[in-house]
Image 1 (cartoon, rainbow, N blue to C red):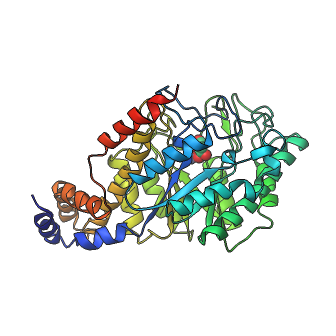
Image 2: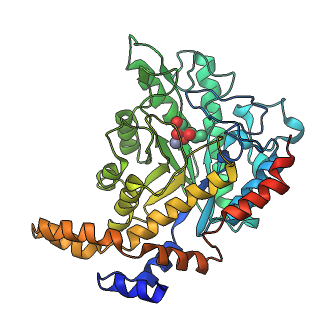
Image 3: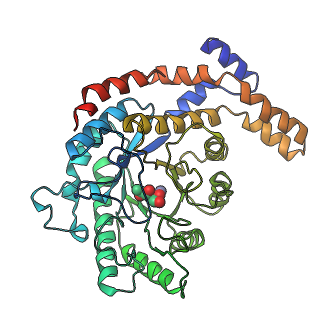
Length: 413
Ligand code: RNT
Ligand code: ZN
């Protein structure tokens, strides 16, 4: 079937494929830097901590900042659409200060190479994440909620530095920088006090957010249900983070690996949109737990993007990727996850939303189910290929990845 034929089929349901393709080009997806090096960063970390884990040891991991940038650029080159660069503080370029200064003293200048990189990649902007894990200043696995004043102080200063860095990144790119706060704080076993750590976390966040550049920085708060080694209690739980974000007027961030297995983020998005101007996402793929598998084109991903699109919220929902797979070619993982999100967005943009909402409002649930089922077999592949072609891409990206593996990754020993 040709694109023209597919376009006609969709038109029968009131969907305009050209308009969907044009709309998709306007939606930015924030591409995480951490898929390239198993979340290790440039500070010399040998492993992860804080309840998160990368599994697998596929050869070719980026070991240096140069290698990571090279891989990142190559991966971005295979990703269609509008992209943002998403960084962690642990990816600072410290130069001669490496080992001499710590995360409570990082400055905007340590991120200048990333601004150059982002501009060279024609990125829509840069987003940022303070790094509250894999660091000796965590005490008993705690950061901002620690009862130890010195520990809390260190991490509050880190948060403040990150707000300054984000202001620089936003201004330098001419696009507000979303700064996502996530802390791993929690307890392995049943705590005696579930409130005090949360009060300390709220107070610490209040201090970090007491003064920042409102024009260029958009703070967000990510919740979680549990982590490895912190199974019994998570300080930054869903209720805590939702209430904090709502009362402080910041953006809630939903990671779809951070809820109980039968909860779905697709249903949470419209609930949050009822109260928030902006909602941020970490699009991931949990398999039985928060495993951060590569995002693929599956049902819940489609549902998530449908909620973004049919609520007219493509500018209000800030989409970022969050997965880290070290068991397959990392570049392939990177690209496949981003393409899956693009696919799901395009799929959602092609839904006959008006017709389906009309059926629901009229209580015509037979017609609604007919439409919902009928659209599943429309020729989506042709529209996807047309979109890829318009972006100078094709679906045959495995060959390019394989060639890069042979020429670059396999030489890293
Ligand atoms: C951890 C959170 C967090 C991290 C990244 C690296 O469970 O999802 O977003 O994955 O910041
Ligand atoms: Zn996340």
